[in-house]
Every structure is written in C-alpha cells, then in structure tokens.
Length: 342
Image (cartoon, rainbow, N blue to C red; front, side, top):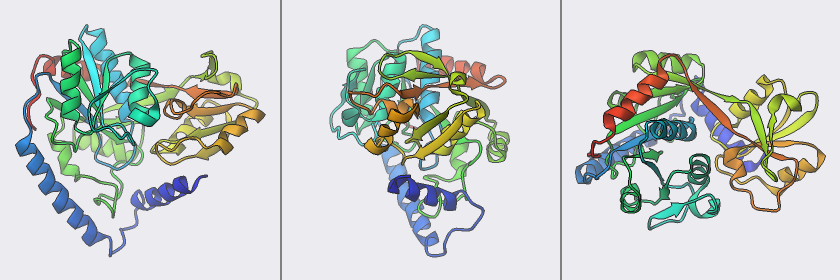
C-alpha cells in the first residue's frame, strides 16, 4: 500500500467510525462551515443563467461515492431519448485555466482521469475548465446540445444548474456527520433537501436511512468482465477463478472494488492506491507474474507500452426498483429548460 493510500485509509477510518472527532478539530470544522457557507451564498448571488440546462452530479462528502458511473448512466439515458448531451468537469489535477475539450486521445495528465474515462465510454463532447460555466459555454458554442451533465460540482455555485443529483455511498453514508476536517462533509446533511434526487450506491444501513429520509433511490455497481489493455479483448471475470490475481484501485473507496472482485469468486491480492493516484511501476510489474486487474479510472492514466496481463474492469450500473424511470423523468423535466442560479 502506498503512503498516500495509508493516509487516506486512516483518515476515512476516523471519519466513518462511531468515535466522535477530536476536540481540537471541532472548532476548525465550524470555521470551515462558516467560510464555505458564506462563499456559497456569494457565488450563488453572482451566478448568471446559462443557455442550456445543466444537471449536476455531486456529493456532500470528500472522496468518491460513485459520481462518475452515475454521470455516464445519465448521459446514456439522455442519448436513448435522442437528446444532444455533453459533459463538463473540473478535471482532478488538471491545470486548465481555459476550456479544454477532451477526446479519447487526450492525456489524463492534461484533463484528469474521470473526464477522459467519460469521453471514452460515451463518445459525447466533454470539456474541462476550472470555471465550469466557461466549459458549458464552450460546449454550446461548438455543439448542438439539449443538455449538459456536470461530473462533480455540487459545491461549485458559480455554475448555475437546472437540477442536482447527490450520490451517497450506501455503506459509509455521511460518516460521523461533521464537516471538514473533523469529518468528511463539505456541506451538512440538510443540503440534501435542495437536491432533486438523492441516489444511494449499494447496500448499507447508512444509505437506507438517508434514502428513507430524503426520498432517495438506489443503484448497484457490478463487475462482469475485464478488458485487456493491449488489445481490447473482453474476458468474463469468472474466467479468472482458480488463479491468484492482483488488483489495484486509485478510487475514493478501493475496498469496494476488491470486495466486488471477491464476490465474483476471485482470489485477490489487493494493492490499494490513493484517490486519483497513478499506478506505480512496482505494482504494474506484478503483471509479469499473472493478471493485474484495475478500475477503468486507473487504466486511462497508463501510457504505452502496456503489459499484456493488465486488465481494466468496467462497472455496470443498475438502478433498483423505479430508479431508471425516475432518472428518465428528471431528464425529461429539465431538458429544454435554461440553467438558472440555484
């Protein structure tokens, strides 16, 4: 495990435990909340309407909850309706001051791993910029769009939006309920009252409670196949049973990926990374001794030459119950409506 992954795991263990936060962190959390709330009010007041509706997919917590798979699912639902759709993102780690379009050949170092993954998975126009409104303007100037999806950006109030979707990890929920740095929250739970949908990723008592309180819906992410990076050959994950495989994940909650692989019946030697961390050479070298499985988010950051035993494992999102129809209804409702300040 890398140093960054150890630090993130220790922090998350504290945030998502039942132990109260350290007394010296609580005043910092209250200060963070006051500053963040004042900043949000100021940016809301100065936000200007956009010519195309925007649906923001985000979360309240620091770290991953499943936003990118939800963004991809919304894009696919909009495409199925015949809508022209694009995606904007900040692009984690991207040094982008002006809008920059993303295509399948773009470097993840330039635009960030998640925008590149979305562009490759969906084929829709994707643009990254620090100011997401400028990215929306660039997309609408270069493409005929009915709708824009913002991957992350729930707290980016400079960008108006027509609807908001908050993604919550079913198992971890909102952690200890404290704001940063005493807990994982960027905004308090009451913020969910202003979201159009609260969507819960996977099972868990914390997520079930939030879904009941906020009329949420549920989805599950499953792993079914692996794609060899050198030639794109798709292999059923069950074919790896009976052999020891290595797995790595640079996502917000790596344990979820490893547990999903074990649920398929694989014997996994796991190598967690920090969120957005590039797979180190020492871990890539493990592919010389057998299959190395990783998330798509990890794979898009790798540059040739690639080892023949490296595989990306895409996730399949499935809405539970009436989830798909509620998503479709939201898209239909906002399509054709201009994005307005929240």
